[in-house]
Length: 292
Ligand SMILES: Nc1nc2c(ncn2[C@@H]2O[C@H](COP(=O)(O)OP(=O)(O)OP(=O)(O)O)[C@@H](O)[C@H]2O)c(=O)[nH]1
Ligand SMILES: [Mg+2]
Ligand SMILES: [Zn+2]
Image 1 (cartoon, rainbow, N blue to C red):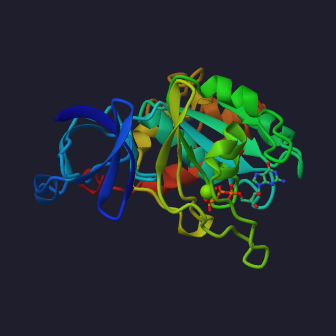
Image 2: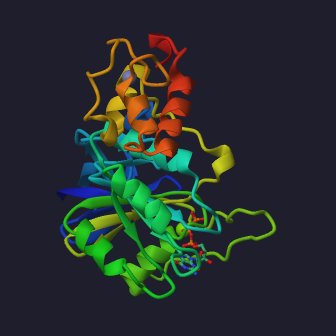
């Protein structure tokens, strides 16, 4: 029997495909390995269901988009989860992820967790001002969780963020029957233990939400490089000023007659957002086309 479905999880060479309301354990056909195509969670696939349970993924439909980190395809919303404390937000990571999302045509959303421990208002204001949909929750009291659920309904959303920020906890707040494993922060290390070990899509309302393993700030790196001339467009709050700078070659760092630098000076653009822009720009400024 042939079916169309969605990969919801991949573990140890097996892929779990939801098709026609059932979940099928499948192996990818050898041809993918030969062509070095790695099926991703979120992939829309054609499968053959075998009487003896030897199901196979026969074809992967074209991806609308995909991320290397976390590895997932066909995403509507990249939900950047960040805790107000334990661990504190890393603004460069948040800003890198929002830029990568815009670059791929995916909507970034920021959710600040642990509002019961430390207030999220300072962070929330910063990102709302920057034109990014931002929510505040507490997984301890469930405050703010309903708004997130409503906002994400009907789409495919992916939770990403450092280890220990509360991605799995938030999914449990959304749907307690998921009972995902969560961790107490390892205070001694100053960062969370990696609790979640694989990417998995969960059905929530009329959409899906993926839990993913967190990363630690230290090993954060991305293959999703944005060229320097495309970077400013990945900061929505820059858009009103783009094209108005004195020089068309403006790098929007501290160039003479730069309208973006002026807007930062006047407090119209958040300074930390501009600092992240400069950091990301400096990472890629010397890369040659062939390195991208
Ligand atoms: N007080 C409080 N604690 C929270 C909140 N959200 C999560 N926690 C705690 O933070 C710790 C880490 O939460 P997890 O949900 O495991 O974090 P994670 O992002 O899934 O981490 P990884 O799976 O390692 O990437 C756990 O001890 C949670 O109980 C919150 O809103 N308030
Ligand atoms: Mg987790
Ligand atoms: Zn400029």
